[in-house]
Length: 489
Image (cartoon, rainbow, N blue to C red; front, side):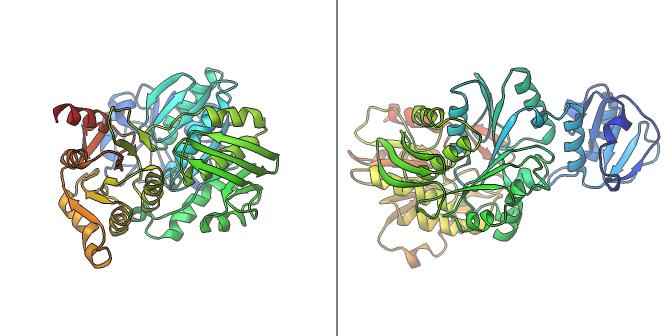
């Protein structure tokens, strides 16, 4: 496809200047390391680096043209296109070049602060009962039986379109995608069609980026706006969440709400929940259904309702949906009990927001015979406002809390912990807690003091097998670390 043809569908006001020349374009890239002969290179100025400095490398590797929000420099040897909204242009061009793959696979997009991964895994298990499906999220990317390590929760638009095209060539008809607020803010999913969109909840997170909850909500809402998600047909929304209730009232397509009371379209008329899982009678627009799951906890009641509603809104049979829910044994890093020959339990969970930590500690309390020992921290270079709340929830809902490092990134771990614990003794006096900055040492301490009937909860890392120090990653697989510590004791 030549450059003129590739740019032709774009709104005229997006293009500020287009230099002469009409080369053939064979691919689209925003990473100079991925440039090949005939590529259209997008020089994006990001939060950390400026793609403009990689233009010479892209040209050396065979780029046919450059797209930038900056004016054309002198002596550039290939066509230069100056645009507004470069990420929208990049998403549109990669989509066009690959023949609009999201129009050829039925996608479900899931957004919200907590629960996205679990809802996505349940839906993937439902869809894959009949045929292979695509799962793209925080824990992993899978195309049928093919598994790949996940990077960003939602990759860049170019990578997304390439993944969709691969899925289509494999005969996959259904896809499930976790859609992060960053993906929406940075237009990674711009132009993609999500006929069904799910909203789980909105709690304090990412306020270092979004600044306010209203801005955070506004960005999340994009997935439910037909002007942004032009394929939207059905929305499945948590009515018990205040932001979800607001959202349900402004979505201009079919909305199916879920919650714990009869004011929602999907709600349980009876619930039996315990350590062995959840059994409930769900009242739905498609009739009453007996639902069984090995997942535990109140938060998973919501996740199951979201997935069930999203499946049936797409004409999946109740039988297929119920079997998919029942047959999912676990979600990696989500209240994952380690298989250990111990008189106490060790559980891994990804909980890294105040709401998620509260939910998983309530679940731990409900299934624990004696004490809950919780190891947790807060990530660096992220929303600092949630740190005191994380400490308050972690300490007040545990019998013994050990505050430690998470992914400190470029921050001093001790400074992060200071932010968490400042003033904690003013409002919590009846709980035992301590600080151990080194996470491995904190885990060791938790295992040393655990006794028969206790539950040791390692919160914040979940499925992650690394820790981010500075700008790099070091291996940190908590399941392996626990086994190493136990072997050495």
